[in-house]
Length: 129
Image 1 (tube, rainbow, N blue to C red):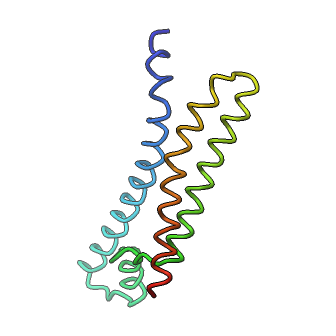
Image 2: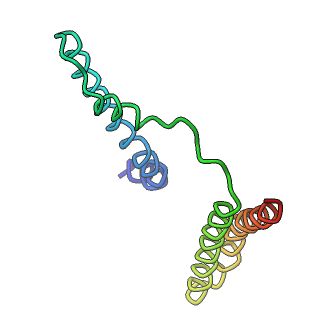
């Protein structure tokens, strides 16, 4: 019974960690197996097809996409959507528990202002370009 009191508050953090770490681990294992197969093929003297070399290098991220006004506007709209969703959740929850409205609306202010900042950046950079 004591384990539940520990796992329940930690479950959101464990879920986020699992969603980030498990796919990364599986990708690294898949890449490791592919490299081992290629190493064995090279040791046996088999030529590497250009498609294999291209497939190996295509998964590597060289650079992130540069910021653009359109990208900033999209990110801003997404953050505003998150803020509106949190505020709507607080208002809907307020019908049952009136004390829940203000904390959730206050939490919605953070993504809301981040979204507004991205939208302003997108509009400022659009006029410069």
